[in-house]
Image (tube, rainbow, N blue to C red; front, side, top):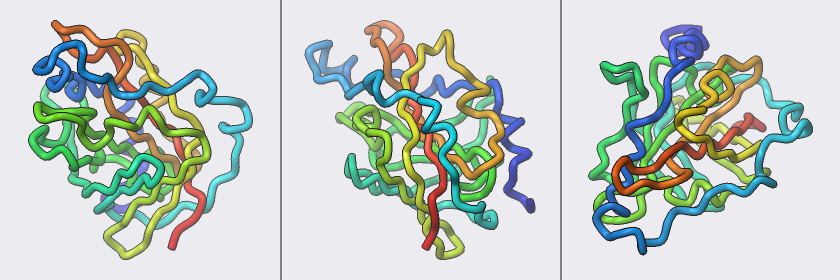
Length: 209
């Protein structure tokens, strides 16, 4: 699979994106600030969404940009690694329109599970994935890849998980088809610890251009 490949799926299994969830905007403005949208139960996984066929996997190529038209996301992507404690690192919070991808794992469009993560807010207000929880099944996600191709994904489900019960293998585990996870923080909110969980978008490759 080259430098990028499905070996990274196993490496990240068991990792939780905890560093995203400080909620610095809500902390600085008070609890009356509008909370980011959270996914409804109707957008969760169903048997039909899990079984949808995917397009054949693309050759590995690093991603440069992610677009989610339904929630007006158009953001560059940077490479992310793991922190010293084993959690997925995050983009610098100061750049509200920057997302990241786990560069030791699967590249978006390649067979396996590709991981993209970004902040829900920063000290100045909403950030790149503030409206991630408002997505619906069937929404389109496009990823510009460095080889000039565009990987197109369809959203299968949007779910929110409490950090204490985060399903690591379901989110990060290896997949037999090209899949994408887009992750930010969400769920309940505490003024002392920030957001209590994560919003996770599950999507599969439908084609490329």
